[in-house]
Length: 380
Image (cartoon, rainbow, N blue to C red; front, side):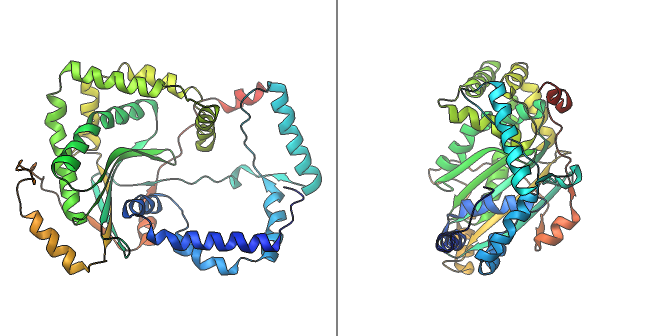
């Protein structure tokens, strides 16, 4: 790395491939666009595909050659050495890397104030936002509805995962099988920059507005669903989640990825599965229900919602609206079952400028490391 020289021919090939990948993003499936725009809107800072595409013509061999020594002049290094090595061998490898960088590049450590980490936007309690984007390639539209639940910590981590475990099957059964909203129906946990929440992603031929109403109707029905759940059914879900969390990676690369994710997030909870599962075993149905009523249910005091609507423009907006408007008037599914009633909700705030939206939002703090870093360093 310290002696790397840019090959002009290889540079042009890689540049062309990178440019093509940026351009091809517009042809990706709508649900992937919804996931991407959620990341753009929720992250403190993120270069968009369009912004990157505007800069590729400025990339030259000369600029890259000039950038490399600038990149290596100040560094903060974290590494993972996992496998058939001793502690001393691992420390020797790190010392060798530092020695080469210091000797050949005169590398200095980054100052603590320079080691900046990205943070996640903190939506206000009781808020609801929506952001619209068009898709000019596919006939289907897509939504991601995200309910922000706060910082990652052992207790909320397990309550959120348990809630997702409980709703996964009925979510697919109702929205995919019975209401036939689309082939892609997914509910799960979204985690980014130490913040987490519930996400529901659907790709559908129906309008995003209609699909979002059906998502809200489904979540509203979970109130009675969880309240009426028997202890036996709850314990079955709990055991299933415990089993899933305690499943050992089948390859060394899988365990390596777990450890590396702890380093990337700087949470360093290297025994996360054991710690969180021990807490999970103490969770009661009432705990999950309270979590739902506090953070996700309609009218919840800490509800924070953001919706991404990726709207197909292939057939024209007018045709899309008329087609779906006709379907929205029905009160039953295609097999004759009654639709779940949609709750009355105030209209969301429409985000028209990503930059202005981010300027108005606060930021979550970063989660604290699980271990005492000073003590850990003193043991080296």
